[in-house]
Amino acid sequence: MLCNSLNFVPPRAISGPAQLSSVIPSSTPFVSFPLRFCSPSALVSRGRSLSSPFTVTMAADSVSTAPPSVDTEDTVLLLDFLSQRSGNLDGGLANVILHLQAACKRIAALLASPAALQVTSSMQNSMKPTSASRDAPKPLDIVANDIIKAALRKSGNVAALASEEEDSPVWIGEGQYVVVFDPLDGSRNIDASIPTGTIFGIYRRLFATGNLPLVEQARKHCLRKGSELVASGYALYSSATMLCLSVGDGAHAFTLDGSCGEFVLTHRDLKIPKRGQIYSVNDARYHDWPAGLRRYIDDIRQGKGQYPKKYSARYICSLVADLHRTILYGGVAMNPRSHLRLVYEAHPLSFLVEQAHGKGSDGKRRILDLQATDLHQRLPLFLGSPDDILELESYGDVQQLVNPGYEV
Ligand SMILES: O=P(O)(O)OC[C@H]1O[C@](O)(COP(=O)(O)O)[C@@H](O)[C@@H]1O
Image (cartoon, rainbow, N blue to C red):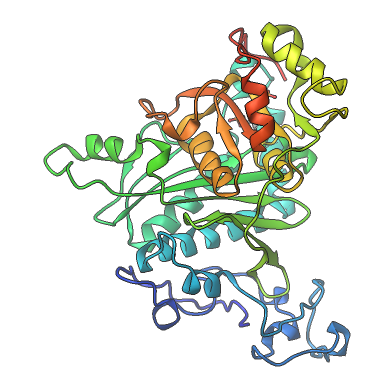
């Protein structure tokens, strides 16, 4: 495993079959982690087994605070994984993913730094919270957006992108792929150091848009059915930084190894439990819910649903974190009001959940079947274990139509 060094040359745009080891440096493109992130173990060549992390001799000038990692022949880095997988992968798609993960590492480092709190706080101190400002982008959303946009431009493989922080889809160039993303979901939690996440979805570009103005081409590329996605994923910035990814060949999760700055495969072939015992929703909205949803939640709380045990509630109010827990433990994560966005939240996350054998629904229909018509369109969203989603849908009216906008 090689450490990231400070003088990376970003990989060139790549097309054709994925033969990554020959075209992409084994270190992550253009990530400039400070050298103190490099532990001696990260400098050990791959294949040499270490009996214990504590047998590593620390270099005299090392100031690493990260625990040394154990690197064995079984260690699978994201790059190794992308080299091995088939699914929808070709070299171009792999290159886009490598640039996205590099951007996520930068965002993770930024969020974990004192500078992040200062930026957010200074903004919030000058802002009296109102229902209108509640959804206003915070500076870190913008910074994260810029980091991802720069990474995608550098990849050379992207034709168009769409982001929560852009008014409309953006034309980039002649790449083969289209990327939709929410750069920093849950950012209202940042001052309290609560988990946040980046969500992304990747489409192949369309080819029948040639004569249209570029703005219109970008729009057509980005407003699609979720079933056309070829890959999607999220980064979760929490006690660990995780990257959960699907290239149409199952869902897999990687954990950022802080000692060397690489994502390491830790959860291969994630499968959401067929049924869970946890529901995740902001139930302060209970009295704005329709009767069907109230009945459903009342039933599962009391063990009167199809599963004869009482459910527990967990709600972080950070979509990626709530979903990550749901994929691992099962159950249902939901936001029944029209709040979450189809293009860069519901579509990518539903793709990933289906790849993990779960379901994504708006309460009535499969999310991936929905055709996007507007970049920022919102909808009710229910993601989770297949048996839980089917049971929830059987209650009929589960979409919250009363959506006054809430202060907090
Ligand atoms: O206020 P609610 O209905 O609980 O919504 C919370 C949801 O909103 C989000 O914070 C996203 O909201 P924004 O798009 O306004 O950032 C999710 O992370 C979270 O799941």
